[in-house]
Length: 114
Image (cartoon, rainbow, N blue to C red; front, side, top):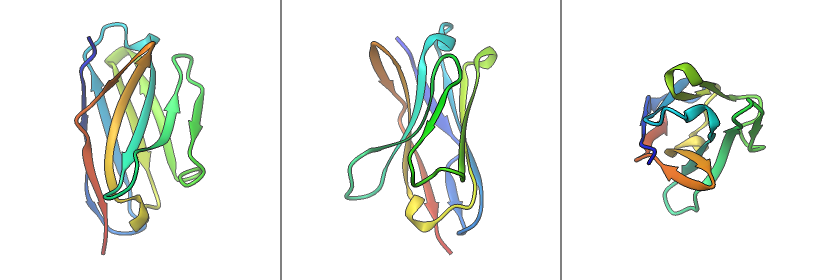
């Protein structure tokens, strides 16, 4: 069983930055692909960024060049650095761990507003 706890969300003005963290309980974290999803009110959950166990990253077109996903296998943590935030980035952000089965965190709210 993998437990995921997100943190780092909050209210930020357009153009600002936030860094989300996701701490995993599993000692075998390094073998899991890690992903960040988001779900805006009234919309479907969408994949924002992913990082494989070997460090390969992928991003949704809407966040390319603004968001960076990274992982610290020694501390079982994955990060999402979000820069140049826009109001349309407002959503609940979820951490996901996948290796055959899929695990989810509880989500953290990100609100981009002036």
